[in-house]
Every structure is written in structure tokens, then in C-alpha cells.
Image (cartoon, rainbow, N blue to C red; front, side, top):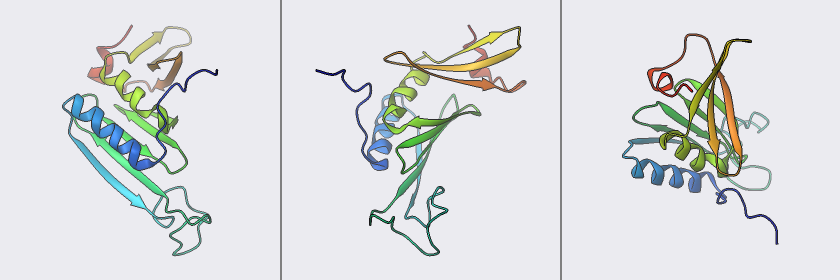
Length: 154
């Protein structure tokens, strides 16, 4: 018997949006969703022909941009290719698997996300740990430490 999947599978963009909405409801956050449906509307479909709506396999690609209210400022762009870009107070985490998005947001809103710093070489990183020893880490550019991040420096 193999290891269980680290995150529940979210087969579609819509299932990921529903999971983000559930998480936002649990934390009392406002949610705004903008949907782009069709190969002519999604951002990564530059290879699609002019006025082409369907993918070659006949499916209708769906991309969503989700803005969560509250602190920190969080946006999630869900792509049809099973990944997402999550931005937390201006720090962008690209290529997060769609299945990991709810766990990522639980870590941010559950107080597990933190900032690490070192003097040499100088730098600060926003660290978002997920269950199963999975960790996302992105550099915080000089001078862009938000008040929320400043409270999470370790």
C-alpha cells in the first residue's frame, strides 16, 4: 500500500475555487472571484488560434483569480494546468500545485507562515510550511516587509 496523497485532489479549477471559498468562510474572509473560461480568455493559451475557445481535446479551459479580504492581502490565480500562483502581501509563490492551495492558505491563516532572516548573505524569506514536510519559500525584496510579515519574523 502506497503513501496517501499529501493533499485532497482538486480535479478542476471550480473545485479549487470551492475549497478556497470554504476556507475563507471558516476564517470570516470576504472572497471575490473572477473567472476566465475558454482558450481565448485564459492567460496561458497563447498557442490557441484566433477566436479558439476549446482546447484541442474539446475541453473548455477555466482559469480563476481569487482575492481574499483581510490581512494579509492574498490573491490566488488558478490555472487550467493544475497549478496556481499565490501572492501573500506582495510575495509571489508561483507553480503551487492546485491540490496544495487549501493547505497553503490554511498555513497562512493558521499562523504557521513565518519570515526568516539572515545577515549574510542578507535576506528575508516568507516561509509557508505545509503538512508532509512540504515547504514554500520566497525572497522578500528589501523594504517590502509588510506589518503582517514583520509580526511573523523568527
